[in-house]
Image 1 (cartoon, rainbow, N blue to C red):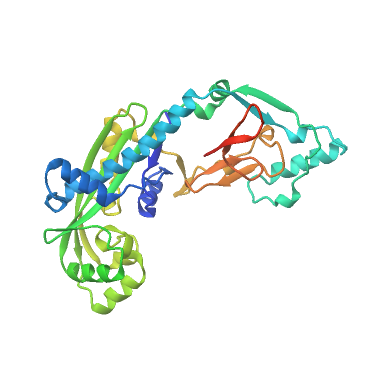
Image 2 (image 1 turned 60 degrees about the horizontal axis):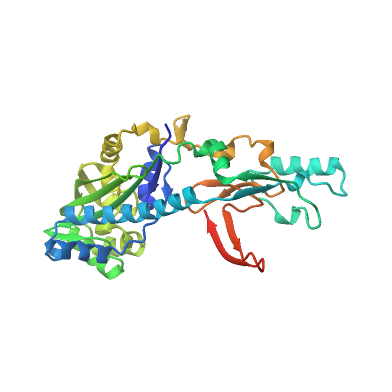
Length: 354
């Protein structure tokens, strides 16, 4: 079974931890208003945000992030399931034109050999005035024929949030150099606790589970010059507790008790346990392979592309902001849906679906 993991976070650290463990997640940022989410939760409990523990806060925020992405995913899935209509596929390279068959074949062969490289759109043929052969499929029949859609419902969504507890105070991201410098100076030579909330949602069933990891972090004594230099790197401004284990801040951390992955933003042992609670195996999430001791992304662009997939020059793999490559037609990945007015024929609604 293949299970896709959606990470409701733009954290490079969390993505790197998962990738090193054999899981390349799909990135979907939740855009949750964190202060508002905490205020709403506190009001519902009849307490102030300050009265809630760090463990409660990270659990609330992790759940809010995962739910936001799940609701977005479900909306798209429900819309796709209820959609109707035809999928029309054009085959420009099969069109009859004044060019010789040999030149057309040569162009097709060239595009086939270059599909994994950047394509110079200036080389694209001009198909204006050419009658392009097409095939029409019912969109539901086409989805069933597509092998990649067989496990579309096997999707897990994970949201995470981290918070640092020191001397009874909870600290999130400092955001500004001044706040970061003050916090790091206070942390110097002390030990605090980093809490990381995890919320996992099975998109197929809607089942949700939330758990929290905790690790103690001991900091070295830092001079004012070291603090200034570290803050100037910009690294501590957008991370919980104003420090990172895997970056410039790693040299100033003298010890960790607990799961080090939790300090990086996502606990692998805890996430594995949550995945297994849903009845999946952890290795169901693996989508990378090992080669000579090095983790290699299972990049589809490295595979031989079927010749029938190339319909026109420019067809090939396109790098997406989600962190994966998608097959794109003429250098673009995505599906453009347009609705026309039956009377005028003018486009009235346009939707771009990734």
